Image (tube, rainbow, N blue to C red; front, side, top):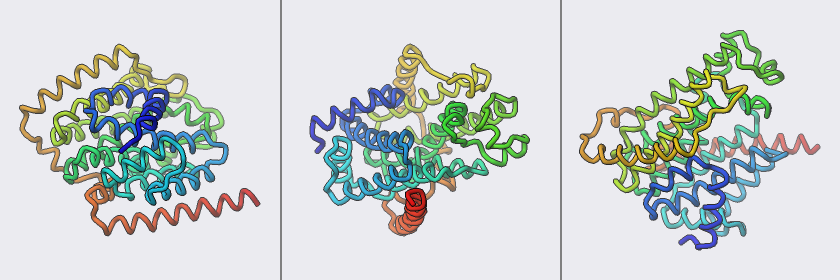
Length: 336
């Protein structure tokens, strides 16, 4: 059970670090909301440690050690770690899911770039869909079709974030736009990082990312009806709040270099109300055929892990070891 003081610290971390999730979480039932807050707090603080750290490689290696301690039942003396350790025990969280997130953060620390949209979905699966799969575990949902749609939602949300943050990422010397898209448009990625600008070609790429996100938002909706009724408003809210970010980017003419798409409090409140209405509609609706679509190839391993199928977990563990070894090599070289 999560200690009350640790739970309050997790709520504070989410209030200040993830306004969109904090808004959506208000519609989750308490039995899901509290462990979800603990999960998001650990994931958010992990992401911030890598994103804002001076030594990103060292930050990921320390996160690996923290996660290992969590699964040993001896977390470090920090509220988010203690709370997440309680979640792991009570909900029997498959270790492969947070390890997938850790792998995505390691890719960031390595400065990995993605040549194709599929590569970008690979990355999104780790840093976003892994969290969606963990949310399903907290709801007691292990159905493969529902998990596949939750992973669709995670990829959609991450693609929305990437589309919104092109300029912010470039100024931090990061680029997520697919390399083959840049090459086809005659844009050199390093030149773009040196002088980011909302070229028509870049706006077209942002538009393509949002189109793919919209396709996956539509697919994801079919899975919400497979969740417990009490949890549906919160997940609908996450879907609509993040999609609204994409709408803000569209209203800015797909310029996410010179400006940042935002949704105000009034808009979020309206979306929360709409999410409650959508839940009422799902109770009476038959199951959509879309829910039976196979998972994205890039997220299939998460579906298997959440169902606690053992073979993929072993394979993922080996890949994580390889990525961590790369980080350690680079860390040693940098220190030398």
